[in-house]
Image (cartoon, rainbow, N blue to C red; front, side):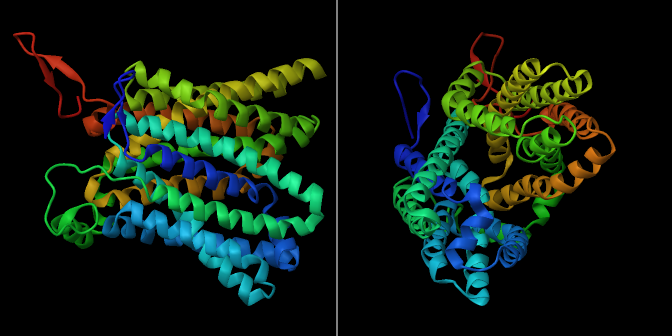
Length: 441
């Protein structure tokens, strides 16, 4: 890595290509995610019921595959696995228009789902492989901003395609998506991993033969014995429930409990996406330059989540007029989005840096399960609580976010110093000379 003169922050070799690749692949994702069921229905010609069933089954299979993806990262390196997954996704979307039978669609969907579900683990591992210190926080923020901007652009692009060619345009969209993943893979191939410590002759993957052998022998037992990291994963599960609020609970709450126009859901998504894409890097940069510990900035993000959820309880209880409700809802979405922008880069960099290099893939596969489990649990949990009282799901989320903030603060002294601090903290000895801190305080 090299440092910029302006900021003094380390720059990753091939960083522009990495971020451009992430942006292009996000455009591809945005071209089908908003339409999922309808997209595959029109591309394959299969019924919506069949498509939904196959997507559910293959999605669950993808979750089960995540631990194997973590093992592959530790054995072969995140960059190699990342390129393989991009290739599988590109091939899968190129084949979807030809998968007109149930067996063909199930086969293509299964392979593609395995790559899709595992991609988050591998991308997080790649950031840990190519960046160190505050560069990890910066890449986390840039990645999230590009993903939001790319998905928004992809959704607009597919809307234009459908306006020109009707539902037949979904086929062109599938091939466009394939091309996006292929281009992203070519660009990401230019990034170079950071060499930590002295290079080892005959290294296997990113950790050398000794590290690879150790990683292979201990497997996930190392992760399960690491109580601070498991605590970090549990805390993230509590926060991850909040990440599901905007896409799952918000529209449900509007249409049932609040009896507000469904159009407000679209407005909320627009505000959230615009802020994430427009000021995400700026907010993360301010947090990073403040020198805040990652645990504390992630906790602040969780507290902002809690404030937004309490705001929903107050708004739903008072039920002001239409204009006041609109203004209040948008203000709540802004607070919620700020929580997301503060928490995400710090929380992501914290998990990457807390994972030992030799078994980083396994660690991050375990950590990513907290997001997957929260996403799977959220719909049934929210609907059950909403049926009892509209304030209950928001109250649960507020308590969960507060619990996550408290857990992060309590875990701070048990996590490695290089995970808690974006840059090594410095103390002074009796002569006034700086002495780097190498252990968590």
